[in-house]
Image (tube, rainbow, N blue to C red):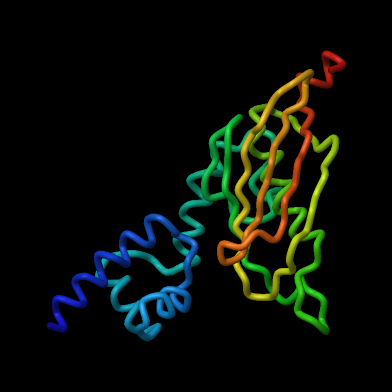
Length: 190
């Protein structure tokens, strides 16, 4: 009976990490109601690297796609990028990104993740944020993983409009509407 349960858990673990590669061992242990050590052993049996290695591998694969920014200029790890269309960035907030007394992440870091993702998905050698309308709907805390998803919603007169939504544990904390001007847009005066 135990062997069948493990095989089922291994299969489910692999499927879960294919859908949500950002999950930590602690989050997986909670989700599967097993110990962190059990998750680590299961991951090793499946040949799945630990959380940071998974994120690093995903981010490295996407860096070659960047045009408007150098990889070191991006705040967060871009784990999916379709130039001119969409992208996903993941970032774990650390102590230095938060207010000391409350542990709440400072808003400019949340904005920086969303803004750099919005600029990164523009298919141009140079791009800058011309205008942004943002709304913070909930705070984020030290240790939480922020997942930003960006989608190009339009292009007009040299501007690319990008909507970015940031979530923590599936709950929206930030929404931004960015207007990005590219190198071509500046030359034409658009």
